[in-house]
Image (cartoon, rainbow, N blue to C red; front, side):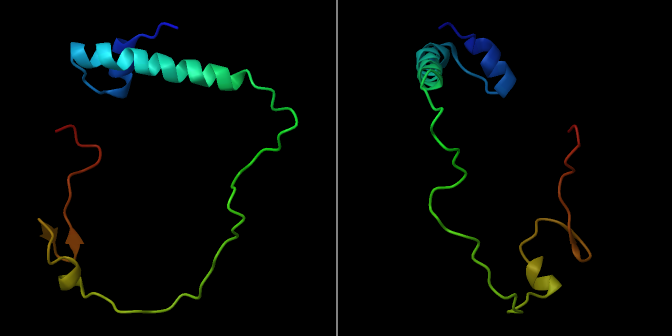
Length: 94
């Protein structure tokens, strides 16, 4: 198996040094080979599993507890605007 570590690095937006690329390439190839091995197993009689613990939803009644005032909630904010946190915009380009 031969993977393009440069393309993976670019797609993942993870800059890698040449040494890191040399080290990671065989590791990634090994992982993909292992996945291919798993893919070759016969699972026709294996039931799909969504969870294995046997637990069911554990629900509790909602209850009102201790509340923070606006000032307490914002006391460690780097920046605030009245009763709101001020943060960098998600879609800002800067």
